[in-house]
Length: 264
Ligand SMILES: *Cc1c(COP(=O)(O)O)cnc(C)c1O
Image (cartoon, rainbow, N blue to C red; front, side, top):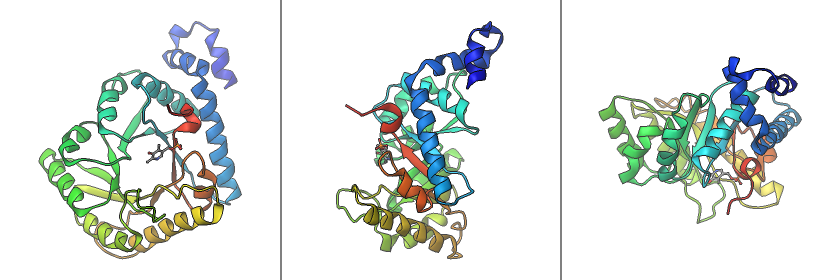
């Protein structure tokens, strides 16, 4: 940090990277990102884990400009492409052009909300992946669209581990079957499972759901079914419960409010 701050007083036009940082250092998002990265890292250490936990920015309702700011800020704080999660295809499309500008740091876009069939091509224009596969029909339609475009798509199966009826996702009992069917599809790369945890302040039931997701992924990856061996990522944990999710093996937390503040 001190290096970057000091850089501002230099003639930054000679340093395109520092010039970019000038914006991020002044933004409150930068401080929030630092705090959330610290939260992730101390949870990871307390869980005795030596692997990395990814941070996806859950950008729903944010303006393209804010998303660009957050992307560039996070890129200065940790290596690798920034992962952005959109809930709505419409917002993904709206932010696409701003994010495609050359001054924006390397990033990937994923859909973490429901996908209507008539939005598939809009999504494929911008998305590198989707975490909300919950039916074979959707998977088949994505496969057909990807085949036409001769491209691959990273996918996760969304599982409803909390049994709350309002939540989307396949039931835990049906997850193995669906994962095996998705694994058969040539253009879809099954990389893991995603869940929205139980909305509760009680640790035990929330963690039980996350443990269930971890066990399901292990079962799927060990099944020997074609295309399932790489089903190892666990997208779980949000602002309120990243510590519990990381303790249960989350490889990617999806954070909105802790970065951007409360949504209106
Ligand atoms: C909004 C949302 C998040 C982030 O939730 P916060 O509580 O804002 O951190 C994560 N995942 C999904 C699917 C979401 O819709």
